[in-house]
Each structure stands twice: as C-alpha cells, then as structure tokens.
Image (cartoon, rainbow, N blue to C red; front, top):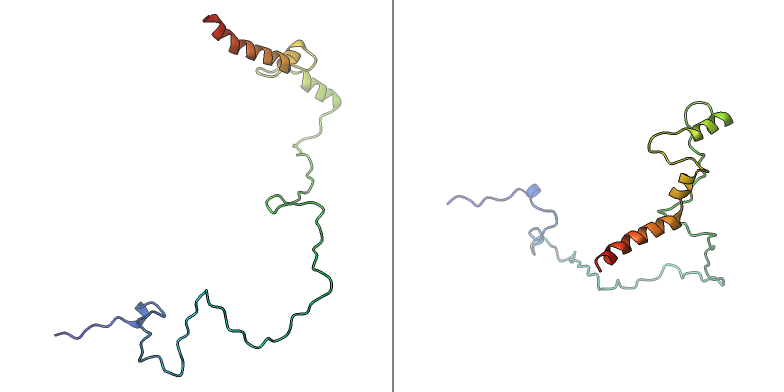
Length: 135
C-alpha cells in the first residue's frame, strides 16, 4: 500500500483548524477565543478621565454645505476667441434673419410666440373640441 500523501504546508490555509491540534498546543499557552458579545475584563485604569466644567460645544456653521455640494468659486463668463463685438456689430447681429430663428424682439410674431395666454387658449380649445364634436 502506498504511503499517504501529505499536502504541502504552503498550499493549506493559514491558521486553519488542521494546525490546531492538542499535541501542538502547549499547556502553558492557553488558546484564547474572542467573542464579540463578551466584554473585556477591566484592568487597572491608567488615568482617570479629566472632567471639565464647560460642556463641549462646536461652533455653529454659518451655512450648511454638504460634501456633495461644496462652495463654488465665482467663475467668469466664457470668453470666445476673437475681439469683442462693437455696439454696431451687435445690433446688426440681432437684426439678422436666419431660417428657423425666433422672430426679432418688438415684432408681432415675437409677441405671439412668447405669449402664454394665447398658448393656453389654443391648447385648451384643441383638447375640448374633439369630445364636443362627437356629441
């Protein structure tokens, strides 16, 4: 019968129950088991805690800023390449008409497109007319 093969020690997990045998544990070093529910025995206290007459009070912050939203530095508006437009060039650029652009300010179409009352009226009439037409 072949001799039983042994597993090399480096392949076994460290501190496993396999290595803790009665033969290897000497009676002078007892095995200590730590449980989370047990309290540690009270040893002689090193120093008594100092008690101050004043309660511990933290300074109240002026404003709560959570870590996810820290205070931000004021940033300058983005600068675009090239020189600043003159007043004349800015006025010409405002009056230019391109396809699919909103109408210029001061015109009837600009007022009509930006009037909430007219849009609410059109929406409500459009919702109400189909049920009325079936009656």
